[in-house]
Length: 303
Ligand code: GLN
Image: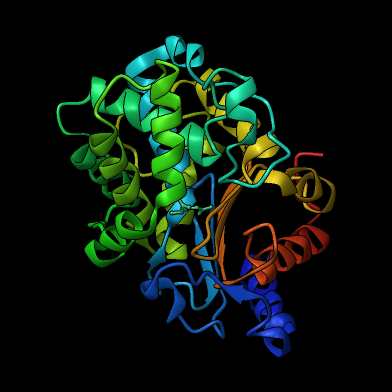
């Protein structure tokens, strides 16, 4: 298949719509990103890479980081992880508090904020330096140095009142073991990691390779864990739009409010789209359209 032509066509098709949606405005560093950007990159299981548009521009990966922190936690904690975190779609916005009270502080899944904060708590317990471990994982997976954007991390901390509330609420149920400040420091930093579409398409390569490292390093996760990560992405990776994503796109996806979405066709390829304008569920508006076009052009999805 001529993937380069497909990606070029997607970018050209969406060009008239550049600027659609609403850029995340809760912190200045995200609010000032121009919405008139669209990038797309793809990496096949065999390692061929294709990209189009603003695919080399680094952006704030935000909640896409939840995929990598979960990957690390699966490696370090194993199945005990699921005593603290559920595996059901929430049907609620990513930062919602409502289910946590009736469910005794156990988050529905690892991809809503509460779940990712619970994952961060596990990492603080199990890693000597969890922040460094996240960067080592990301850099190793894409073969290039990845760093945190300290301005973004500081703004997240200064304005993250809901995340502070979620962490304290879970702590009140005995579901967070470490100091809330240490757990949130990790969470805010992982959200601030800056990566491009090309880097993320490469970094998610293990999800289309049964857990094998995209660049030939040591196994990232087992085949079973890779399957489970893909299942969680499909059912929970785009918050309360997961049903709509499955319906319209049919690929395991993970989105972030920086406007990125990573997507996987198991055994075939991983891809990343980025456009900063979001819809009301916090998912990239043009990113979702780009994925829809990709599926329509290639017929590739899990269904
Ligand atoms: N930093 C954001 C938050 O914690 C990440 C949310 C997201 O990307 N959906 O609210």
